[in-house]
Amino acid sequence: MPTELSRLLSAVLVGLVGVLVVSLLAVSPAGARPVKSGWEPLTPGAPYRSDFPDPSVLRVGFRYFAHATNTHGVTLPTLISTDLRTWRARPAEPGNPLGDGLLRTASWSDGVELPGNRFRSEVWAPTVTRMRSGRYVLAYATRVRGPHRNRMCISIATSRAPQGPFVDRTRRPTVCPPHGAIDPQVFKPARGRPWLVWKVDHHPARIFTRAMNRTGTALLRRSRPHLLARVAQRWEGGVIENPGMVRYRGRYYLFYSGNHYATRRYAISYLVCRTVFGGCVRPRQRPLIASRGSIAGPGGAAPFVDRAGRLRLAYHAWRHGRVGYATSTACRSKPGGCGQRRLYVATVRPDRAGRLMVVRRR
Image 1 (cartoon, rainbow, N blue to C red):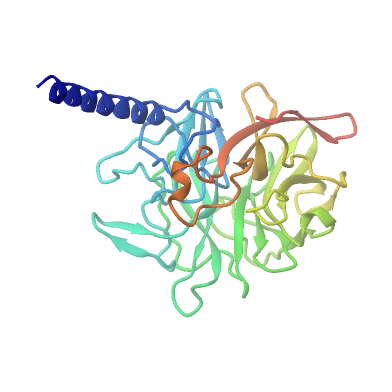
Image 2: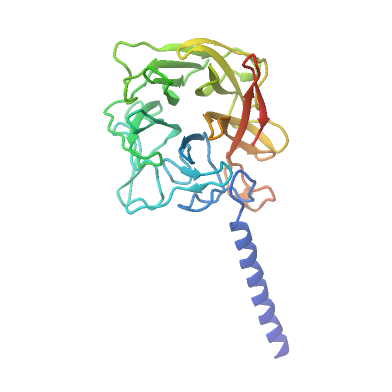
């Protein structure tokens, strides 16, 4: 009898220890800190802990809204913060149990109908811009339905709130060249009309811009695209992508990522442009932010200005030794967990000549 009781007590103790371990793993610090698994879901209203690729950040008053490429079954993942360190996922709503920022992509996009009147489709590198009307426009890339479904093209959706939900009423893609287009941004200068910036999804890669209408919902008729940048440096590996433009202290800065995203060679740099539509030059021969220490393959940089007037860069990066997404669940039981692109926010500052230096990487 004492032996059986001892076994029972041991079993209960093991079970309690197991529950405690699982609970400790589940309560990971918020912000861009490493977690073990890398497969955690994006839980509505809960602290952010996991994958958040191709991030962009918009400041509205005292809050910051981050949006990313779809992950964990959420079409438009959205995070909210007041300090750029602690982030929480967008809360759920009636009819929106995942807190999705975009319930349905464009009518011309490829996707799958899901139960509960949901629609799953690819959304790449989204950016949100506040227009002078007070409305918000979402620019994103999605896959075209039909015989050309391998092509990614650009669409525009709108909302009255920065966290959405956004609604896409387009009947055709905004930009859709033969090889596709990705990584869009609606850039709104202090004066004048907005401009759409994007990457042609082709090798060698190129970045273009084109004037839009006043509401930022369509391209300006009879306007033409302007070439902003093409591959020019060896470290770029034939790829430049994810453009992000900002005007800061009298200069136009165009940030971009170079090389292949699932390698340590992926990195971030920038150009300084004379105008919003051209005259761009590279002031550096090497990346501005590259793999170093625990951060590997940083990319997807999106510039914004914080409440203190500082120039910030939202970007994603892998953890050292965990570059690339897993093809099996075996990594979940390993010490470093699975590969994921986590959200970081760097601080950069220009010198008198306009050359940028990184003040803080995260």
